[in-house]
Each structure stands twice: as structure tokens, then as C-alpha cells.
Image 1 (cartoon, rainbow, N blue to C red):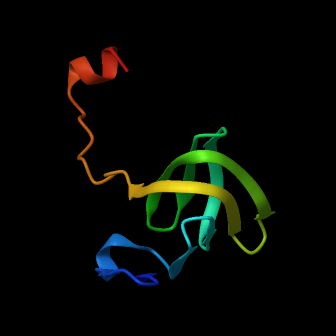
Image 2 (cartoon, rainbow, N blue to C red; image 1 turned 135 degrees about the vertical axis):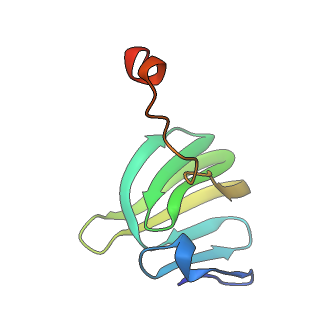
Length: 101
């Protein structure tokens, strides 16, 4: 189950395990269930989570806590947007997709 504090609850089929997002005053974001920081700079972060890849847009973003054992990431900065990318697209297994991948 995925829970957004102050948001909506996602379907269990979307997530492998429990995940929680906590956003305070659009300045502090706490994310549990993180397995990897895929990309990070001052304006953008992508986190691989148990519910899919999570993209965070903003300004002056800094990682204040990175605990890989607990799967916890805390970000500080001006958070403008938080979204999951759609990983549910079926893989193509045709000849051309294998040749050009």
C-alpha cells in the first residue's frame, strides 16, 4: 500500500511494499521506500522507490538525509512538483526492438 500524507491512497497493485511521502510547507520532503537515487541536482531529483520512479521538481533542492538501509530520503528546498513516472508500459520483445535497444 502507498500512502500520501494529505493526498490519496494508491492501489495495492501499484506498489510492492509500504511507502510514505511527507511534505511540509513545500520546503521539506520525506520519502520512505527508496532503493536508489537515480538522478539529483539543485532543481530535480529522481528516486527509485517501491512504488516506481518518483520525480521531484523544485529549486535549491538538497539531500539532508540519505539512509539506504532504512530506505529513507529527506530533501530540503522549494518543492514545486512531485510525480511518479509510468513504468507499467509493456516491454516490446520483437526483432527490431532487440536490434535497436
